[in-house]
Amino acid sequence: MVLLGAWAFDTSSATGGSLRNVDVAGRDVGGLEEDAIAEEVARAAVDFADTRVRIETGTSTTIRSTAAELSLAIDQRATIADVLDEGRDGNSALRPLAWARSFVSPYEVPLTYTIRVDQLAVVLAAKEGRAARQPVEPSIVSSPEAVEFRRGESGRALDAEKVAERLLDAARAGEDPITVEVEPDERAPQVSEAEARALADEAEALTAEPFIVNVAGKTVRFEVPELRAWLGSSIGSSGIELTIDEERIGASLRDRVGSLGAAEPRSASFDLVFGAVRITPAVVGVSCCAADAPKAIADGLRAGSRVIEVQPKRTEPDLTTAEAEALNIREPVGTLTEWKGQPQVKSFTTYFDPGQPRVINIRRIADLVRGTLVLPGDTFSINERVGPRTAEKGFVLAGAISDGEHVEEIGGGVSQFATTMFNAAFFAGLPFEEYQAHSEYFDRYPRGREATMGYEHPDVRWTNDTPHGILVWTSSTDTSVTVTLYSTQYAFGQQTGQSESRSGPCTAVVTQRTITYPDGRTAVDEFRARYRDPGVPRCA
Image 1 (spheres, rainbow, N blue to C red):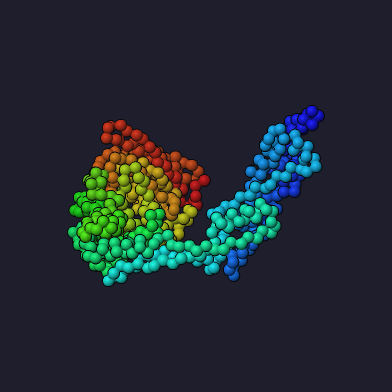
Image 2 (cartoon, rainbow, N blue to C red; image 1 turned 90 degrees about the vertical axis):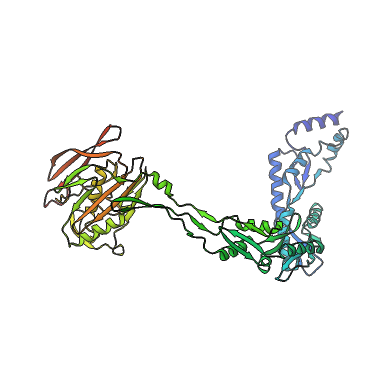
């Protein structure tokens, strides 16, 4: 009764931990909580990882490694569970006696080991190196005359599962270092010669006659030698399988078919012919061949077909003819105004003296902008369209204003084109995202209604807020440059006011624009300019 009472008291006090007098791998873990047991087992696992391992293969190759490299390790979770269970399982009537005996001879809990066979296989293959000989599977080989098969060869290499079993046994036996003997196994090919011969016969029959491919009115005939050059074999889940090189099929098809017309698509474009807008129809790109054409040919061969039709590759243009027509670009838009005594009818023209270097730049930037298409909702930017003004683009040195100073620079004078564009958009009622007036007034520009240019800023940017496309058209002569915006008349702008005020040595000009929309409603916006007096470097 005393023994039973002592055992019951001692066992109940160890709830959540191990019983007293429990050892694992020579470490006393008796009476410890689970966390403390885990720490002891983890230390044992770290020590075991460095255990040296030698695998004798019965050949000249001996594999030397460590437990960690071979993925042989202590299973910490299982070992901890065994420690916690020790003394609590088995015949309940004998447990008090085992508990009493533990004071003389402690409970011994063996370590539990684990190994990753997949990782072990990788290490073994690397360690065996050339000493290992993997089996060679049969394959088919083709020539213009026949399709034959190449015999497979047996291999010889260590079996990872067998090695893993021996390593686990040695570890459980407590060997340190661990030495095991495992001879390589003979490994036969997965596929038999009979299977390979049958596939070769099948492939030969499938390619015994020419194969015809029709595409977009062209006919291409592939002869037997070319067909057989596409053949090969692979080992799959169902054995040896016929492969047909679709990449080579595609290359042969493109080479034999050649051109099918315009390979690259061309978007619909707009031009002006005798003052009328004309659409150059879009062109769909047609080339050889659709992405699935090689697979269709390979599938046709496998099915025993002799003639198939494949589709050409069709690439739609960014802007189709129908889409271009739907943009309703038909007429000049804007309103009637006057400048320099000349009527400006739904366009705007500014003037200059001929023969100056700046004229070259004005006309050059007009050429680069001509034909720009601005879709509904898009924003037009002169700088994005033209980029930096450089000599390579045809611009020359001419007068310009930089930081309030008169200088010579490549592209000088293009601000006159910016002003012309500004006014065309102003009277078309388009909203501006960016503009900046000159710091100095020149009478060749409408006062308070003009814009300067730089790169990347200042810029002239306006947005097409209409439901129609806008075609930017430019023209120039020796004495003028004109910007006309073609679309369907939507809104139009009018200058309905202008005021000036002094600010030190500068004049502030505020120009009012009233925009009239198709439904009769109006909106008013303002444009601001600050001009410095002659001789003043800049406005405060």
